[in-house]
Image 1 (cartoon, rainbow, N blue to C red):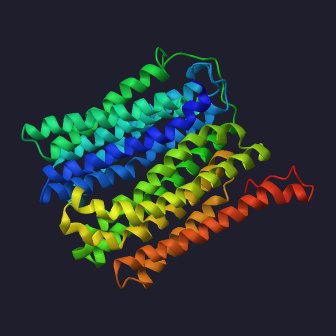
Image 2 (cartoon, one colour):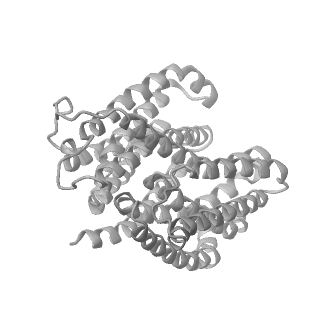
Image 3 (cartoon, rainbow, N blue to C red):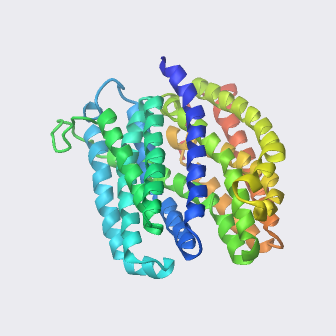
Length: 421
């Protein structure tokens, strides 16, 4: 099977993977009720926020690996030893910080120390797993990457049902998540950096000034993932604050709407190695943008069909008739995340080609969204409408910016000019 075919199959397998993750959350709602279910959501929200560390390591590793000889082991690549050691250093730093803030986190979340320590372990494992995933992603070993994700989700599903049947509640969810992540780490280590000595000397010397470049890459990746996490969680927090009685229905609608995001993110993940390798070839970059535009046109049809005919009838089947109120939010939510997917693609393009000006757009969008939420909040739909307008404006900005960057410069005859501000 060719690398091209494997890359094309990756989004399909990743969509099915998100189906398993969707079922994991449904299963958790069956076993965890009342206070335990609330604590579980709080801990998962904290994990989602802290996973920005692992996701940033993954994107940075994928970018650096995609620029080197993909046949060489990781340690033999330029900066390879750094790529091996950085995740270990980050796990130690993250653990020190989490332990320092442990009393505060325990007070804010209202949970015992045991589940919190399990969560810290999950964060540490995720950082290490993300390093392996970045290596696979940078080499375009997309089926191996799929296997890695499937081992995690299937492992945690199996462990959750076993532990829940033994009487564990909140601990079952966290232990199962850690078990699935550990299984994924063992697989990732075996197929990506197997047999390498982290303490071995490679003879490479990192030039001064390259540290600054790497720091900028990691910062850009960190900001990107923080923006993503902000956008997929902020409206739920506002609904919980202003309309707690409607929050459950809105949350169900959000799960459906975010399926659009998960599918699009799977497509973006398949594009990342090519964007990293060809990002400074504007002709090749233009072709990749055109391909993604075509895929998003097809996605628009799927969003309409899904939010109109498929998702609403499935609510009572999966969650019960008491959540049918979610139907009112699903159509608008689907288009919100379709627009967000366009923004997300161009953000990754900026990160991978080294154009840092995208951060101004992200900050402006986030600030505008917060202002809109404060101004208009008569009902939960107002938050979706605000997101639709803000993400629509951001999408338009990024599309126009890409047109200027890819085509206008050549028309003016200034094809060597770079926009690395």
